[in-house]
Length: 149
Image (cartoon, rainbow, N blue to C red; front, side):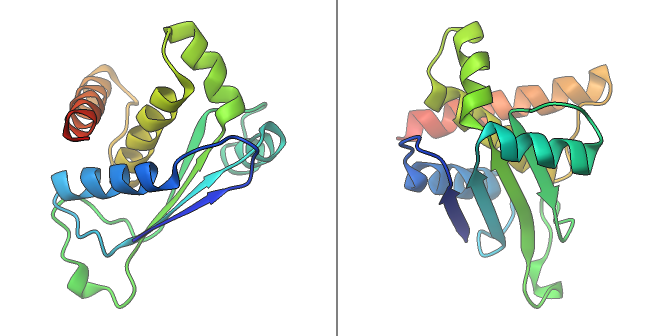
């Protein structure tokens, strides 16, 4: 189950983000009953979170906060109330990246959402091998999702 909270003035389709998270979870063999929250916040809020939790200065595009360390294929029956974690998106920062890449803000936010879900599921990009695996997978999942719409 995905909860979507838009704390900004950006007009975003929460259902599309919910559908995307459920699509990624299904493809990663994770039961969609696991809870996940997506919060859309402003630059000030993401900057505070970035500095507090990652000890890095300034804003960022997205942050992932895993809760129950659920991984692909995880058996949810071992948890009474499974919670994947929280995703925090910042459209103001993501707009800069979208402009640089030559695509829409919506496309950037969808990409960041897939990226964040994969982080919650234990994927990372600390080295070249991890980066290739994660980025190839996020691209594949996003393209499959968009083709299914």
